[in-house]
Image 1 (tube, rainbow, N blue to C red):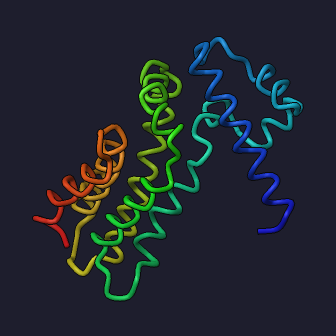
Image 2 (image 1 turned 135 degrees about the vertical axis):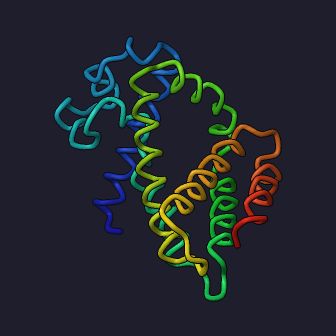
Length: 186
């Protein structure tokens, strides 16, 4: 990644982090995109160059998350099962979460669950991720899976990732949840 792309990525992340903090502190509907742009020292049109809508400010890593899920399956290590690759990817993701993010998880989830626009956006995002992951699982699985089975596995994996984030020991929780999946799928 070039210097310009890296700077854009950093700016995008900084805007998203700042907007999310404002949303948590004051409520989603009480914060305007103009205020966010002003605080980020960018124009409103520039803000919308980075984010297509207000909801996407909260989910700045939407596309990256989906790509990482699919990549974990499609580019797994030689001899590694899809199951093992997804567990490893989940554990690596947990390692990448900063302490500050972990502390704010409850507030972040409360923001999403209490804000209809964010709740809807979140559900639509996860449905896209589920479909992309199910397609990858179906394509790469040694077992012949129909779309419903692959979709159920993808949904379980995404739910396991999500549930583990709120656990007191996220890694142990994820391993425990994946153990349930191991009884059916390897």
